[in-house]
Figure 1 (cartoon, rainbow, N blue to C red):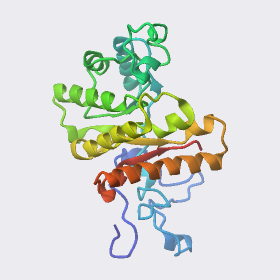
Figure 2 (tube, rainbow, N blue to C red; figure 1 turned 180 degrees about the vertical axis):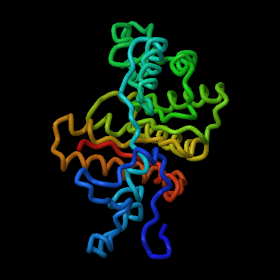
Figure 3 (cartoon, rainbow, N blue to C red; figure 1 turned 45 degrees about the horizontal axis):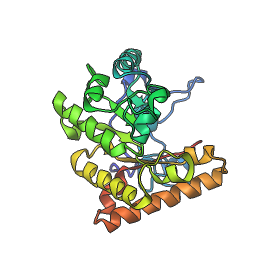
Figure 4 (cartoon, rainbow, N blue to C red; figure 1 turned 90 degrees about the horizontal axis):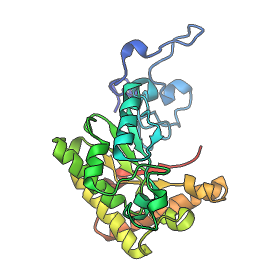
Length: 272
């Protein structure tokens, strides 16, 4: 979006204007938006403009700060809820839910194979009641919630929606992300449950449903970091992750999805 002079208009600020710095420590005034013309490189794109090589917002973090969220979760829903309230009171602006391995792999916490892992490396979340306890007293319409979950992502997402419904939060107000990237589980991590084809169908079901029901929610985060952790190079990380992303696009297109709609909510997670 540009004004009459052809300069990119800054996105309406969501940050306290008193806290936005307009000068350097040396007292040099800094423009809110640096356009391509101002850089002497008219061949460059303006910030906040397609293809977004200079950021998705015109004034970047000066107008909208990134979400502050510490990856956290342990023990029971009550224990993790207490932790989330603690973090939110101290300035955290979103939540990042860590889930235990039984939840990630689809085991009930009383299953003998899972019993020793319940509540370790993340919160145990096996039913709707536990989800409701986890977010008790937390405004789901006022924060962004991220779930690092893949094999059971559709179930966790459904329980989150049910919890929001019970709280009276409109679904179109929900923001956040479910990782829901099953291909990298086969490639690198291992918490897959079903064979590839049924898993891809479930991924597509979730993405297409989310596009209709929770338009501000990211129904998939295609992850490169786990692939990198498995021992590949940075170039391999990019290659595998983009290949996985293209496979999801192919599946969603085959299912009749509109790429101009679902692609807006495909997010990525890379090491930097």
